[in-house]
Image (cartoon, rainbow, N blue to C red; front, side, top):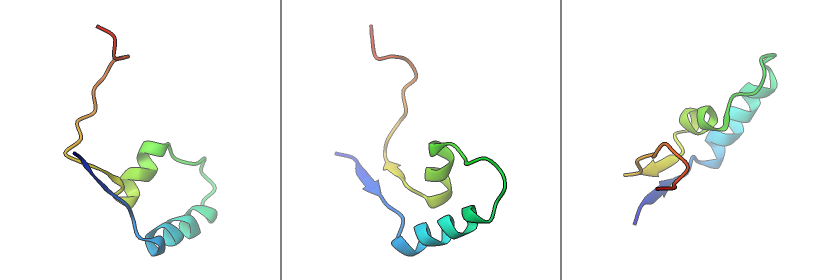
Length: 52
């Protein structure tokens, strides 16, 4: 079983505060997860549509 890591609510609030002051378009969901350290431990992303 994989273990999911979640950022603390303080980290999320700080991230959202920084984002509200930026004029750039929002980052991708993958970039947001990377910046917050939110991911799956031991997870390997597979490329493809899952069909054999």
